[in-house]
Image 1 (cartoon, helix red, strand yellow):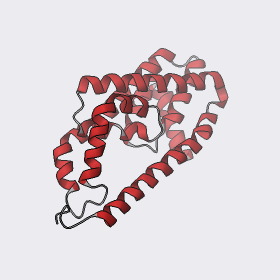
Image 2 (cartoon, rainbow, N blue to C red):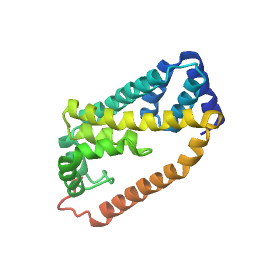
Image 3 (tube, helix red, strand yellow):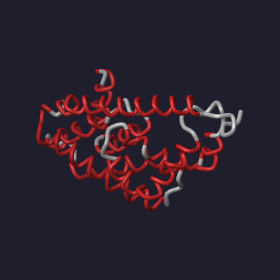
Length: 209
């Protein structure tokens, strides 16, 4: 992460404390370049210094995650499955076909809870997973429950890492960066494959203009 954003994150936590941690985590869900891999270890280190209550940091981080995830869930819900399915039938919609969307729908119906729960513990996917949950209109209480469990676990691990590493809290970002690139590569690869299939298999009979 750029030094400017890191400095800004440090300033926010120094001046606002646990409330700032929650706000930053909510923002991180909507703007991934502000990674929790920096916010949470810094919160753990700050708590170890006695400048913040570690439980308050964990609670506010989890609440912030719920707020951010809820916004993205709402975006997905506004679009909805039916509207997305109609869009997938248009020639200009190259991301996926209706058949791919239907396959994803069936998979989410069977495994939606696990997808949200474990998705909250994967870099980048943490934010994205809320959108299909909204598209599928997963019951809000169920969505929030799985999001809370996954986020609370993620937050505890990284706040704890910052606490244990102390002044070396910033090492966490270096450890997580390769994983983030690996996940990003997988997402880009999936997108390229999906678009390629869409463009090569589309037929006038099933793709409308």
